[in-house]
Length: 547
Image (cartoon, rainbow, N blue to C red; front, side, top):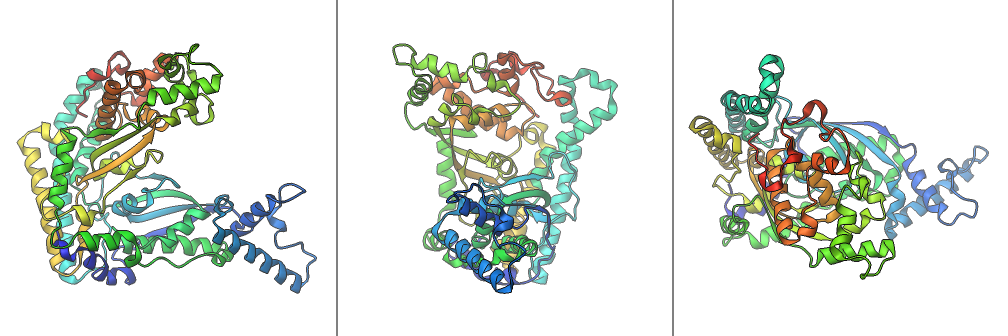
């Protein structure tokens, strides 16, 4: 995609126009709900810590209505001084009480993946490409020279034509697979057609560009918004990130102008460590292909490979269980202790609809076991995987790992569908890489060109989790309704842990199996969305699915 020696420079210099010019497709930022007086709330929370009379009312921070003008001025100065002091000293929990709920529209999925969902301190619900057909003009267009813009538009059009064609080609095989699970759906043609179309478009979206728009509800604390603003200029999408966060901060300041008291200016892109290291290591000797080959060889054909366990996870969990129950090792063996916390027939909280383990003394024993995985998912699948905020990962700088050679994850249904679908897919992938290279050569730079990369783009990363949060993730994503790649990754993980630590691995199960062991009915919690397979009757090594 870019000569290695140019990468860091073009991410900054060619993005100069991007960082200050209006976007070709303007993001929409709306603040729909917020705490009243966020700064006063933070100061009141801080004063409560040393208050002999209990909690301080935020409404009293600036004094009562009887204060004269000079008194109000002095009260404001005291409040602002304390707020600055708290901020500078790192007493940031006081700024976490106030929250902002934004609606973000016409933002790219690349921005959401790279920035909004790359950390654990936010909550989002966004439009799903799995269930909603994507419009051809529903795409983020960065500012770029006219010739580059024409290439960009032509490439997007080709990607959408491939998407439409793939939906047509995949519908017959998706329908056949659904009828294999639900033979009676032949008598319900509308439902069959709707579900068939969804399954086909879920897979066909692999060829859509990561520039595709999304819309979402996004809730953050005041503290997270401060961090957004300070860190908004960073790779891979500094221009769009700055633009969107600028809108969020402006809306927050309209709500409470006093927040300006503690706001710092954004760090320059060139002062970020990623920018400096990209410049240092990706010069003439850069070898992204060598990295990709090495990573894939280490995966050994898996989607997710167990790279480390932290050592003696069974013993760590067992020791924690004994500490909770006040029992010596002679009374409770390691394996039995692990069973007490992980067997749903004993720990019935595991069968609850809510994830109650974090509130359970016994459940918190699972925090002490840790696992690390090397994983390879498509950009689309990883965008869902990263929603599991408590299984954090170190994800790549695309500028460091993408070159002129297409590098994608081929969806299983496309590979299974035969030459017609695979030919359309491969042609679309090649066109995306070609279009990105042409956009770059036309002067738009690598930041703009990267928006043309497809959802199928391979993302390689390292992810870690404690057992409590991994158990919850597997309980959600081993469900046959989960996105297929994430399902496969979780199955790889569960089988490897079962082989390495059977006392733990045997309890990493899908929701229906957990509920069956816990005595909760119905076993499947999905209602009308039941996958059609009695997975609770199967062993994990028997799990198999195409859609």
